[in-house]
Image (cartoon, rainbow, N blue to C red; front, top):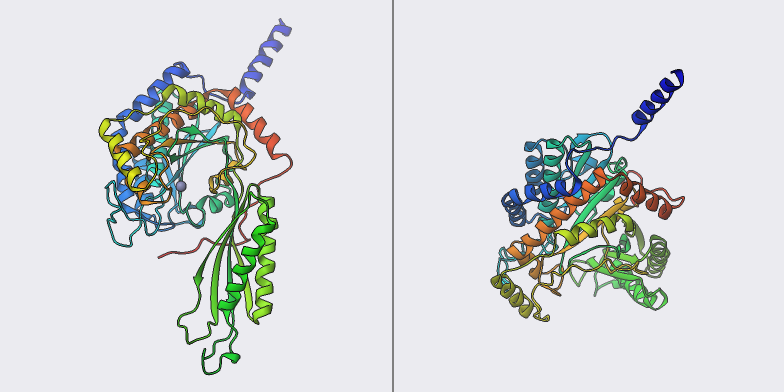
Length: 482
Ligand SMILES: [Zn+2]
């Protein structure tokens, strides 16, 4: 009898100390059907929200209306919302539920300067010189909102335990809001994180992204009359030119995976004054953070040498530094299964004609929309060109992301063609697919303990003895924009 009691007590203890993962009364496939149904019911709200953010077209750190719109909807729908997190006036974190597991979803909403575009299949600015959603982040923001709302609804009606959290992440195109949010520890208690991005193909992203250093180099010289007494001047512009010349010579001696690009943001004011101040903005990218650091060191040496040669003083500011994206294969496989069940997108003849017209006007092959679901790619040696601050989160918690077709195939990215697609049914359809796949995958993570454990195991193995270290300088604040 005593033995039996002990046995029962042990069983009870086991049950109590087990991590509490929900056992919903409905099967997981049924819950997924339900979450998709909720997204379909909410599709009008999601499209309206996406179009409103498209019209606001707010650039990095100025996304006041866009972030407020998203945060207000979340609050109204029962999320608790913390605004202005991590010293970023346009960042927020919205949470619903309690306890483990904690699943994050990332949302972005910043536009790009100079890309204002009307809803036409040819280049036509809506506001001359204005900004536009050339990366489709209006869709990104509203799509992620939709996933969070739908999961919340299903969690609530089936009493699913755990926490769902939507992160409003500003300034992806610029300083990288997630860099500041990561330093603040906002992602630290996540068990997994989910993101997506508009694209012209549909696939779960296992290629990753490049690491990057964002460097600003200022030179301080001495002004003089450029004709009367130029020998008294020390040209800061000369120093900038020597630096860019040095960088261009350096290209021969870096690995093929390295990308270096720059703009001269200040080069003097008028030709008859020897410029006493000049500024260069450089981005160094490579497949790994280590590769980037090696090249950054060379760039810094070149700038110091240019300062010496021109008798100017260089000031090198490391503005930010992003990791390469750490791919989580286990999470990606779970997401791929959902994508295969839910996708692909179908279009009307009218939509396909619109797509082909855009392709004609951007001089790419008139293939229309390519929406077939790609198989999960083999682990890649090198990531594709480009960086994202989603990578920061991927070194803190297992992170998965999906790309969905939102623009005609092959159009130049960060261009008017993406802007016009992002407020059109071709963009909306891609957004809704991503929303459904993210929501279904979040349900997997909330309810399938084994998937999460396997993801965590892979994450820890890939991390080795590395713990996340922010690429920001100690005490570095985000810039204030007006
Ligand atoms: Zn983007």
